[in-house]
Amino acid sequence: MLGIFGYSKATCSPAEYALGISAFRIYIGFIFLTCLIKVISIFFQAIGMPVKAMTIALLHDVIFVVPLAYLLPLISTNAFYWSAPISDVLTFAISVILLVLTYKSMSASSLGAQSPATIKNSIQGRIITISRQHGAGGREIGKKLAEKLGVPFYDKELTSLAASESGLASDYIDNIEEKDSILYSLYLSAEANQTAINAQDKILTEIAKHGACVLVGRAADHVLASFDPYKVFVYAPLNYRKERIMKNYGDTESLASENIEKADKRRAKFYENASGKEWGNKDNYNLMIDSSVGIDKAVDLIYLAVKEK
Image 1 (cartoon, rainbow, N blue to C red):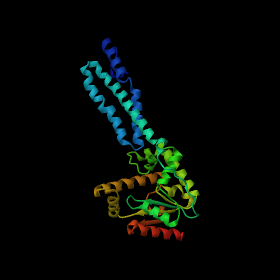
Image 2: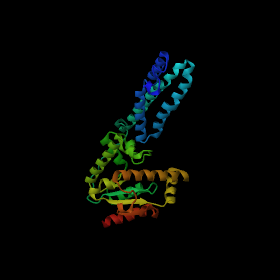
Image 3: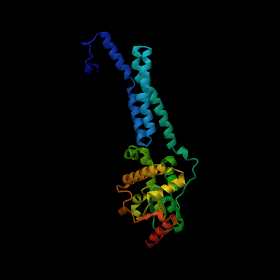
Image 4: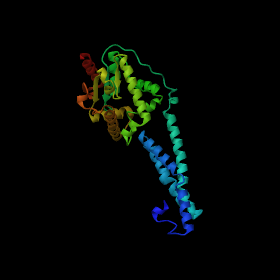
């Protein structure tokens, strides 16, 4: 290895050659930990936790190794070589701690405080799926529509059921559709996320077998295509959505705009990954409705359209 760089017994003294070997062995002595550190960092990035991923990268490449490279030579010149292995060990230890804490937050143990959900028997009829722009009131419309039709409504209940099925934490599953990730396609392909998505799909199918209902999000229209659901897309003008978000969540106007843009992009990407179709394309739905006509009016219009079917 040293010879590649012209550093051989023929070009230097035995003492220099021995020093080169020693420095080489020390500096890369724990390089196998570097490989594991990179794997953990990529894992955090893949599951939509870029802050943890960047923290690990900075710890290894900057926060530990740079100060050590300056401080260790104060002890002795050769002590510089230990900056890399010490950085490897410290960063690996912190990475493992972060990994264990994250794993625990994703485990079924956090489900203890959640109230159990069950799949409700329903009447025969059409399953209604609602996709919605952020701030358009799709969830509120779905709940009121279910009450008007006298059928079950599934939103948070779906999350709880999928959590029981997969063994993952409910809040983890709840965020699958809403996560903000730099590598979103890779994020969705991560094993824990695929487990959550598969559990959701299985629960959606079981719900559909129990009769008519209203389902919000989760690409349910694609998952339940064989049940021929009535597919609704709820949209609204940007100003209307901003006003709703500012009122309901206390966001400033600029923050509301930012959240709308991010949420819609994430929902579109999730739907595209699940179905291979374009989210919000009129060709993919039975009914497109502008909720700015009023939430109750939108419910009435969807109700009439469903009854016609």
